[in-house]
Image (tube, rainbow, N blue to C red; front, side, top):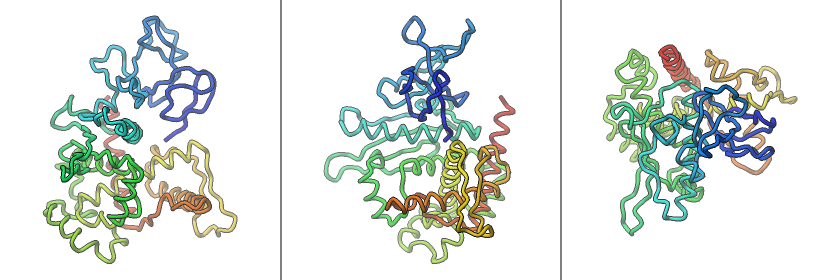
Length: 365
């Protein structure tokens, strides 16, 4: 995530801010420009112009309908047929807000989802709701387990563009309990979104395309029975040498899961490096010999780097630094993974596919 600045007073802003804490202007995120702007209210008290626009025909905006619930600060063109922004238009089901704890969980879900959608838009990938394109669109259900004893449990997953998230994942304690029960080293709400949307983009970018042959060479044959593969993984566990070939043990279960896990880490890398770039970070540990490759000046916008090997040259020093800082605070490593050469090749393939898709979409516009 990049840094945002109030164009009225120069205050640094968080992506989720709805008001500048210095000048108190209302703020809104404009998804086509991928910018957070201070807003000037029109006389009707409902619509806004971006601060600094003086042209009589300058576009006007309203807040997304979900702004009223405090979970969205994105803008919608005033003439739009929908009241929902690009991110919130993807929702089919939100939690039952009559349950007090559900409102907090929905807020956390929307923070993660909006950050996901920002990344997808920054990559130039198509982000279309099923309300617009029922066959190829994307949609989210945020559901809770049935409250009665023995009630139905909600499974987080993806099915033909519909992503279901169990809202329990937005509770830190419940998510940590799930992480321990599944012997995972890492489990985050944003990670769930990134993993599940990876399944969606496999359908959009790989299936029935010229990329499928290279995908199978790197990830394996996705035609292998998915249900049997998962059952085998849960019964027998991952191969002993899984870490040499996969980003996680779960990635070894089936090529689709390998893609989704690797995709999620690819988005982790791009977004974290963009944040480091926004802060002008450089890494130069005095005690580390140059041949270890732990020096890096993150002066490039990662979304604009075409050579994935350059991204990895920046990522290793940054994760070494992040992990070291967390250990000094008595916290676990934020990135407890080692990316082996085979996984780098898989990420490089994802990077190539995404850059081609982004370029094609830009040319079509």
